[in-house]
Image (cartoon, rainbow, N blue to C red; front, side, top):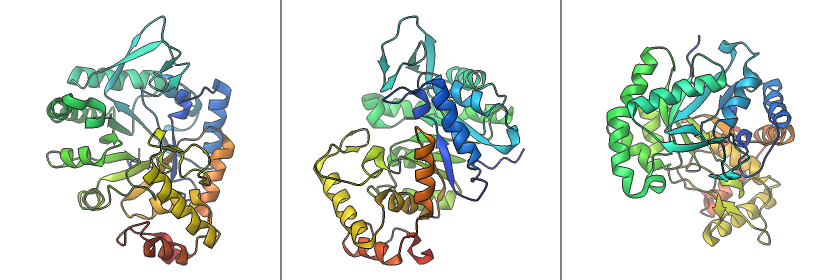
Length: 339
């Protein structure tokens, strides 16, 4: 099997399908709707897919595995995550961790060697596969773990990463990485360990370039393959920005500073006839560290809208004006030279 971490779409597009919506993130979809999303992405050439036990407490993994199982294994790349184990429970709340109508399991943290091995084996069972192309250690940042963050980091370095290396040597997975929303925890890990891959959500986007100065150059130097998620910052960049409707940033109501910045960018988009989602997607793809962008979509129409955004022609003057007005840093790579 080719062991590259990601495969582009068959026409060369660097987009993959993220599995959070397949786990009923925020709102439910039925099995047929979930299958239609995967089938539409596959038919359009998508060959990289990501999921996690966290997404619907196993629901996303089951749905994605069912949808992909009929395709040749060597023709796709599939990743999942470790950190949370699932325990059966007959009665579960209608909403768990922003997922609705989940499978009848509750989750608990376990980054121990035995917990990581069980997590990988459980994921393979739900997916109906014998190997994962990448496994990400999920959500180990201080925002998630608070006062326990230092202890979590020690355990990741002393137990989690070594156990994943053993599983890799045994052929159960091909690449090891982190799946996080915080660029600082990645830098902490990289000071003490090597990674094959990184899935980073929300920290390198048109709106938030906090990963640009220090992390992105490291990824290039260390040859860490980067999958970007959350390039629309959980909604604020996904459609036209308007001040008179609620806007989300990082899964919460957007603060005024983010709204003002998005409105400023929207004004530049209007001047150049550019759609904001196209600018957001193409900006994320323009950095040389970015290997692929993973998209969480709920319908074939949303997938096609993203593909259209990737192909939209954006004039170089648009990027120049964003720089001139200070909306993006001078050192941020843009696709303007290719327009």
